[in-house]
Length: 265
Image 1 (tube, rainbow, N blue to C red):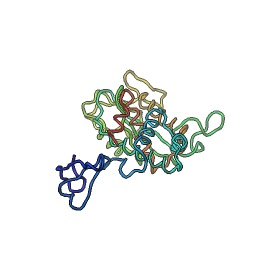
Image 2 (tube, rainbow, N blue to C red):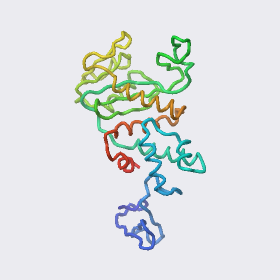
Image 3 (tube, rainbow, N blue to C red):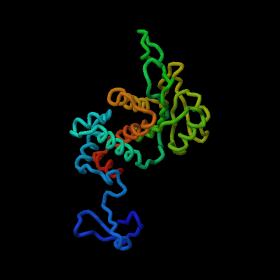
Image 4 (cartoon, rainbow, N blue to C red):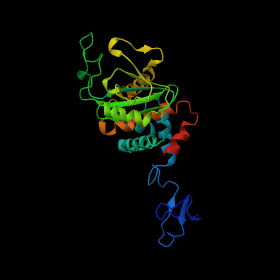
C-alpha cells in the first residue's frame, strides 16, 4: 500500500472511515485515499455491485452487449452513464500484459466499418457479397497462436513497414511457423522467422499446416459483434471494442474470467 500523492509506503488505516488510508506525510493536510484510487472505479457515483454486474454482462456475451442494452437491463436513467461505464471497462481490458506469440502463429488483417455499398456486388446485384470492401473502412490487424491467445491492433495502412512492425512486436523469433495470406505486405517479413503463405487469389486456403483459419474465425466473432450488436463503431473508439473482443477470446478457457477482468481494472 502506497500513498498516490507522496508515494510514501508508511500508511495507516483510518478507524472512522472504512477502506480509507492516510500516510504519515499527508496526515497534516488531511489528504486520504481509498482502495479505489488508480482504478476505473475512482470517484464513481455508482456502487461497485453495479459495476460488477456490467462487467459480468460484457464478459458473458460472446458478441458483446451494447451500452443501450446495458442501460435498459441495469435501469440506469441515462444512456451516457452506461456508455461511460462500458468505455472505461474496455480501456481496462486493454491493459492486460501479453507475451509474444510462439508455436504456430497466424497473422491476417481485416476491414471494419462503413456501408455495404462500398463492397463488391454479389450474384444478386447487392453490394453485400465478396471482396474486402476496403473503401472508407478501418483496418485491424491480428496475430493468433493456435489454441492460444490473440493480439489485435487498429492500423492506418497495410504496407510492408506497418505489418513488419506489428509482427516484430507480437510474434516471437522462436515461432515454429508463421502463416499469412498472399498479401504483398507480408512478402518482406523478417527472414529469421519461418514464414509461409496460402494463396487465396488462386483459391488455396489450406496447405498442410499453412492456413489462416484460426484468425479468420476470430474476425468473424468481431464482425458479428459489430454488425449484430453495436451496429456501428467509429474509428475513434474502434480500438476499445477490439480490446473487449481480444480479452474475451484470450480468457475463453479461464474459469475465473471475472477475476481477471477485475484485476485489469
